Length: 272
Image (cartoon, rainbow, N blue to C red; front, side, top):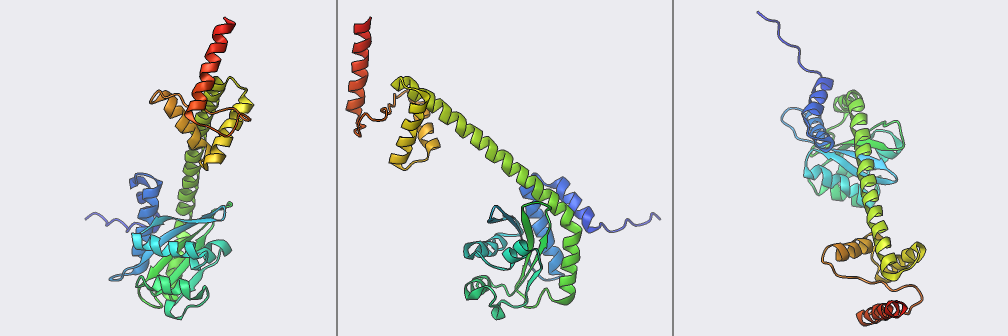
């Protein structure tokens, strides 16, 4: 008779989640669902969210359900709550019963309790960097995370802390790469728009930048959107969009632009 295989450890199960997940977001959500199941116990239910605090902004990067994400976001709207305290101060925060909780004022306790929840446990984990994070557990049972349950949650967080650190670190790198790509694409569009304005107005690069900046300011539209609109109009529909040079008056009507274009054509004809 073959010996039975030992039951997989928590670390083994986390490693399997990493291998089976399609991407980091999928892994973090699966981890949150796994954590909720581990902490709930047989026959019970729990919610879990993973909060990331970076650059003074908080976000839930993994959640066991939409309800878990929603109750996390209550704290972000109020700028206070156990998961923010746990992440910011890097300490465990326990709410035995929301009906008896007043540390963050009545708004927080009432809002979370309105989702049918009664107890909360937030446990920080170290990312060894500027970013901070916490694992947030919610239950509809008061005093769910007292005593033995809290000790089990601490041990569980310790066991998965390395996987959490790696996942969040990869998530941060992915965000940085995405932001960099978006910045480069935006920069390219702006550079093309500057070239278009230079060609249209026969002006310097500095003057073209000022023209686009003025257009952005006067229309209260972001510079990259002004640039994209100009590039699309020239390269897409083939419409010639003209921005007047600084100091040429406030009237940007189509008639004025056409008059100036006609004057320039006549000047070139006479010069020839």
